[in-house]
Image (cartoon, rainbow, N blue to C red; front, side, top):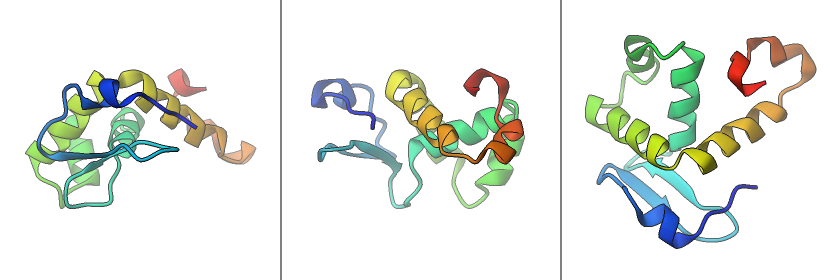
Length: 104
C-alpha cells in the first residue's frame, strides 16, 4: 500500500484532479471520472510514451484532463510509480512479458 502525507499530496494539484486523502490510501482521480492518475501514467508508458496512442486509449477524456493527470503523476512520481509497481506485481507470471522493461 502506498501512503503519503496530506502535505505532499496537496502540492501541485491541477483543478482537473480530485484527491481523496482518506486513509489508508490516498487516491488521485481525474475529476468527474473514476479513472485514477496512476492508470493514465501506466498507460502512457505501456504505449511507449506516445501521446497520440494515449489519447486513443482515453478518447472520451479531454486533452486538458490527460495533461492534468500526467502533470500530477510527474509531480507526485514516487507514490504513482509505487502504485504502478504494486499493480504489475499482482499480474500472473504468464502476463509479465507485457510489462514495460523499467517496471520489471
